[in-house]
Length: 245
Length: 295
Image (cartoon, rainbow over all chains, first blue to last red; front, top):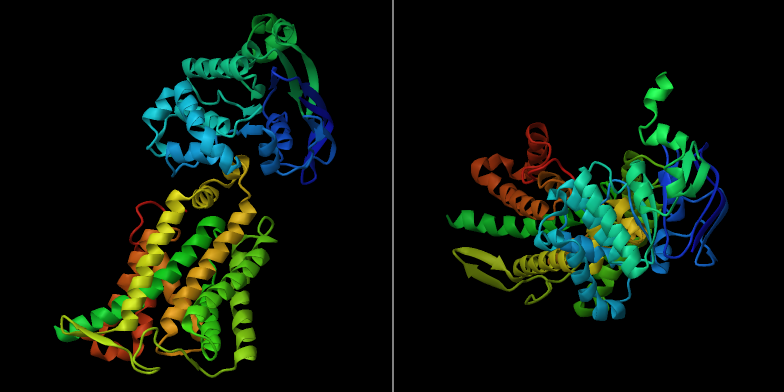
């Protein structure tokens, strides 16, 4: 469904992605993990058209989309849930959700918008309770739910999730990741998720890529990666004692 | 008392014009953080185009054409600001709008000349005589009722646009969080152009309305633009409601000041700036905004 081939992205003269290649098959949940500054967010922003790659190919649904503007990618069904949520803080929960459907045609909205809204209220009942409240007054977990809900209003076929667990309590993280897993099961939504919470990411994702300083340094099935001693030491906090000895 | 009422009427109708101009400032500021000092020239364009056309056609034709002309100038200015928007500091863009305002005024003077052009009252008895009404001892001109009525309409229309239409919501979204707006697929650049077009449209409506009964001149924009700017800052930049209230208050205070200090009548125009300076010193976020001035 999505394929990156030696994608390079620069911030000015600084190379942030040093040619990364990865792929996500339809209906798959794939994670990108790695330390701060590895280029995880840069990778997502390059895919979603926020940043333009310097070179390399990005193929979505068989079409080369490298450098395409975000609005046309949203039209194609590729929607990003950004780092820090980027909600419209002064606007109500309802208005935020409605703006998620911004690119959908008016004919489509007339017939299915109400259903989609109900569906999101079903997934996140708290959003229905708070629909008239300003998005800025929500708790961190509710804001993340709203960010996901807003993206779902675009009827995405593929979601790009950037650090959905950031700043959230473990229980809320669990809930959010359950929703992601359910989306894949029920709607066949393909997901590419960037996470620093490696443990949570490897639980929900089938495969993962490990990014370090703008390169993919490791990839494989989550089950195998979570057994890998290096991953355990660097990201899962295991084997620390062994190192000291 | 009668004098008070009379001055109040003048104040309110002047204040309404400031309020409309202030909305224009806020719309552009909210979307770009740029204070558009060419806002007053939108007012002038509206007035001058209407004045030029009114020599040949009726107000019903001249008014819409004047608004369209204003919108066109707004779109061009918006495009000019948009090109360097990412790279340039906001201050440079503000200076750019100052330059644009001088350019627009200069071009208008080249094209229309220095002389004032007569714009008849919307519904006057003749070109130079308006219908008048006596309300609470004050003489109210029909044009003043037009001014207030049009302002009320514009305020309601603007409010509904931002609150209930998808495009209006999208414009607010761009002001609140450009990154988020982009990610839901809103074309932020289009919205910025649209904000210039709207501000220019509002300005030119104010221009046609204010010029009726008096003369339209190429130099009329500067003073009105600055008064509107004062209102926008007093109300808290980016706050539409604040700008409207502050605009009307400003008009009223300006008119009533002669009751308190009769010798001020020659310096009426200074009142706005004295108030502005005081407010900026004491409460820089604007008198009517609760938070720090954010969009």
